[in-house]
Image 1 (cartoon, rainbow, N blue to C red):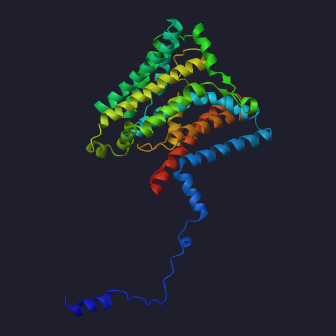
Image 2: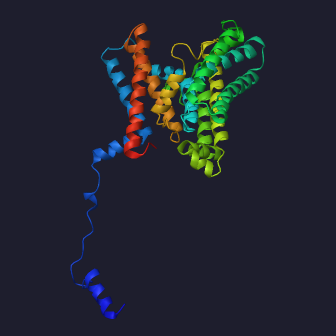
Image 3: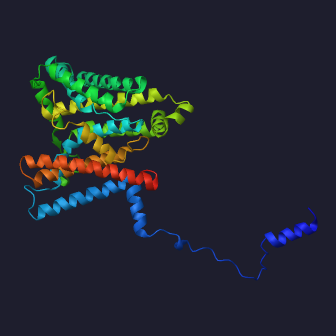
Amino acid sequence: MSASGVEQSAHHGASPVQPAGGPRLKPADSGATREPLGTRILRALLTQRVVLLAVLIVVVVAVLMIMDANDYLTAPYDPDYMASSLINAVPLAILGLAELVVILSGRGGIDLSVGAIVSLAGMVFGFAYGEWNWPFWLALVVTVVVGGVLGAVNGFLVSYIGFPALITTLATYYAYKSLAVVINNQEPISTEPIQNLFSITRSVELPVIGHDIPNFPLGIFTFLLPTVVVIWLLLARTTYGRRLFAIGTNDVAAQWSGIAVRDTRFKAYTISGLLSGLVAVVTVAQFASARPDAGVTGNGMALPAITIAVLGGVAITGGIGRVSGVVLATLLIVWLNAGILLAFEGNEGSQFQLLALGAVLVFAALLNGLTNRRYGGTR
């Protein structure tokens, strides 16, 4: 290009250089593009599920305490009552974690059989510890392993055979439920060793703090907290956890990257079974009896567990979910149900609990859908 051409291009296409003393462009006002405070708060609540759940817990507890102060409840809704109600949080939170692991695996992952596994594994524990007088630790290990085997059956059918998870776990739900009923001719096991297990679910006074705060159920410390830590470490600090999130997000891409998709998904259902086996021991201790209908009575344990997982921010499509969300969702459900029982007398309370559970599930599904469309999911 000729020199004149360069000069012409510079003349027409380039901006003239301002002299040293000429006008300067002012930087754009950063406040002009900043979102309003209300928008930022809404974004935080929708994308940070832990924050939203913490706010909802505060709101629910505050409303119930106001109702208590105005004599709308049949008994005091105070810290002692809230602490004692946490005994129900132990099995629900652990099963919520089981659903978290399964749903994270993607491809419509879900486990409807967790309640039936609780019933069947609980009967196995009843025989081992209550009838055959095995040591507690051995009966516990065998029960958890039995739960894992039952979960592995689900995993094999879903991961290797290719059956839909919904149909598979519904079928095994009925199968495991029936086995739990016939294994002891529909009779519970309530021998003395089993009845004595109720002591491990009692409320205890925390050391050092003493009477400053209410007593908490022992199961929170012996079963729930260790399980929460193990599952958090599994998902956040291990290669398996990263693979599980990967196959839930896009299993085709994960397959191309060298991840064994079927093995990873199979292990998710096995873990769900292991956790269900642990819950079986918890329920036997709480009921002081190994009951064949422990996990399936009424609407069973699967629906509340799935509700807790979805409310906790687990994307039903897989690949998104947090342990902390499941724990906080459990607290919200447990304390909401505890308040409902005080607001309605007799059978009405349990019916309104079911109504509230259904409403919460719909709310959680709508919230997850809105968050995914607007912000690409929760964190």
